[in-house]
Length: 280
Image (cartoon, rainbow, N blue to C red; front, side, top):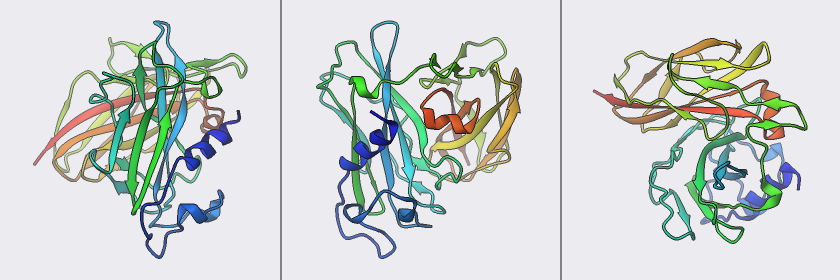
């Protein structure tokens, strides 16, 4: 099955809830094309990006999203309008890094690939589901994540393309990780409102340069980055500075891949997450 069909499958699982704003196009009336993109008023589409097996027999399910607005960012707190559920008994979803902030449509790559992932046990089979529910701009959408053969992902490398995800280290003597499940900075960073916060990562890859993108993953206020998307030299440290406008708990997501165009092949990138506690 092609990756285009994965996106289509997500659309078939979505449903409109009520009359949309005048600037919206109801999903039931949309044909998948760039014409459905608007400056504002459109929903964020939750997407099931696929899954990959792990050495211990477990699997990891990946979700991404598509903000259909070119200018409007949305904050959708975890709760009734942004949540996960599953039919697998006893699976704890409380620790999942669910995104609550959705930047406007990235003009170069649009789909935000595998923004977060969920590890499931070995006996989570093809009949089980984890469903992401997302209500934005008056449209209630959902997409099921599942472990079935047509959706398997190459991870963290692709033998066919000869590609591999960048290796990321967040501390000088810390663990290095590559792949979508990602790496998390081990401490919660303490900061104040509108204070400059520096984040950095060491990235290694066989290519001379890699792409890096920093994103506001979750948290109630706005986040301003000095350096948001760029190419950087492989084998060196890269950094950004940011300021956060409101007190609260935040997660900043960094993604890195050898070339931004490689996202369309669904391999191979690495995620990194930084938790920040902001006070007045």
